[in-house]
Image (cartoon, rainbow, N blue to C red):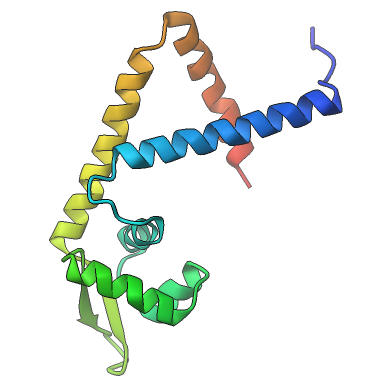
Length: 147
């Protein structure tokens, strides 16, 4: 027996509340797992390099929707921190690729572990009904996030 769909005002309120809640959760997870205090742009570049491998400044700038000069500044900071390194381009000697260093890879792994550990500890604080409700919502949230 299906219930009637929510009224438009109720749905709009739910959308607003869900958007705020997801944003707060993401910010909290990031802050708990960011002991290095890197900015979101820096973290995004590290994640992209981790997922896609070495890239040029221009390719990273396009992927992150920013100007190459801004990306160059981000990469210089990450390079100074020892998280990325320059590599020669395999086919174009005029270009330089940026790739994660061992320290960059290690930092990414530690961040992932820290995120999971924090969220596990927080979920363990929920009572059994709350935990079951949250677990039951996971497939719905996944379905909403699909293109």
